[in-house]
Image (tube, rainbow, N blue to C red):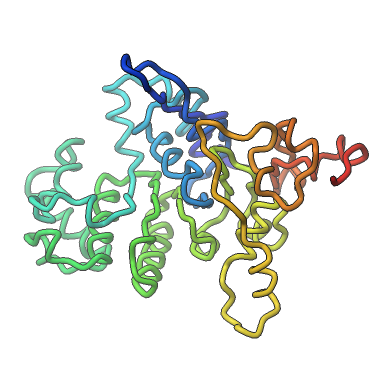
Length: 339
């Protein structure tokens, strides 16, 4: 097995909640709370879960756009958490991000040329004439005409703007791109175009992706490994084949059953309707005790309310399948009973 490009170990990001006249810290919002995974070069790690589960915060923390509260990050064997400001700036050339909103992520006052030239200027890549050629090449790579170089963002459609965002991320030839809900704001037909483009870019340039989405169908299409996130933690992670063929955590099962099926006569529709999760994701300021999912879990047991489950590998060393659930713990299976 190859050494991972990115290694994440017990990563946490907590935000202080202030209140009162003196604005003192009264609590901690645990947006990310002990996440671990590895990503090899040229591969895609899909991150799925409901809104509010901490996916976007995790993506930004991986790049140190948010400073980690705890945990470690290694990129190509280098500990990112120990880098100072100047060293981190140099490292950012290898790690880029595609933002969710193609309308808000581009400055309306800058032309495409100015937008794509900025990262090249910051990292001192090429000469002035060489940078212009590089920008024209990038536009062709993402399927836009070179003459678009002098146009402003308002002159493009949503899909075209997202292509510009992808070109900006590719400008400095990174090895890792975090795509934060990169297609969720786009029409379905445009989504497929952007997903195919990302797949083509990975095959051509060998870029690794952390692909964040709430859409399980999208994640299945583009990912090699998948992590299912709930209330700041990964409750299940495995290869895309294992996640979709043998989901194990009750949360993963519910998410998959709720995905609309193309066949209206399918019996799966009844199962989907019955499996819709009740209630909302609990507050990360005051998460439930024990298993954080027990307040919505149809299979919750007494132990789930008091003890936090540990992550257990139900796969193999070569094909791991991590699940954070008491139901798969062999040490407890003989002693716990459903209420």
